[in-house]
Image 1 (tube, rainbow, N blue to C red):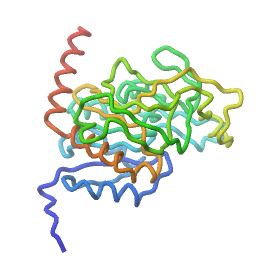
Image 2: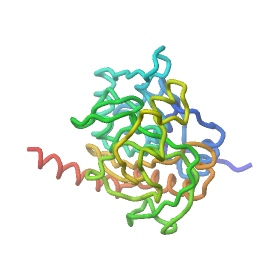
Image 3: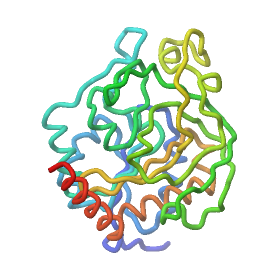
Image 4: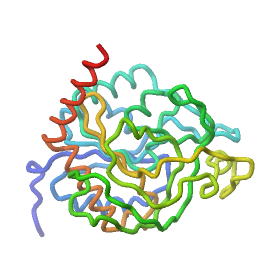
Length: 283
């Protein structure tokens, strides 16, 4: 039996919940990340860890969770739960310290009642109609088990080792993306129009695969990007719905590359430099 030297490994936190997922599949993927001593903590317990102390103890955090959305509020629409002031202060202090963050799939729907969270991730998936950056949006669209081609559009450590184009089967989202504020990495050949998606609000109300009476503006086909918020390097990957995606060698490579990059000194220097520039522009 091999002996693992945990002292030589960097710590990696994985936060989960808010979306059904196969724990064994995800565990099998992260078990291959031999440079990391990883732990999975589900919400709401995970929220207590997300603060400045995490940035001092962990190399990165992978978010596969959806705090702030209550699907058991007794109504037809998903309830929005705002984080408390201390939760917000802790989260922003963590990003000020520069913890590398990788957001996956449904994490873009988290904290809809906290506008700044969308700025952290680079967009928002709406389970009910809402306002974002002063513009009103209908509930977002989803489409399960889409077989589509992803094209690499950014020469970046996150896309290193991937073919210029590759096929995956995964769930896709039709939702607002802040393209002007992110570094594009991956684009899908799927057509991001409402007739190709279903209403999230209707799904929450028990009407799966329905778009009756629903429409949504044409959306971005950007399915992977890099950005910063405060001093933290950030990557968002839209994929990761189920085992078919997690077992894809291309998805695994993307995820490993993303974790390695946000944990690297190169990424931290990049984020700090961008934060200095954006802070100077605000003054």
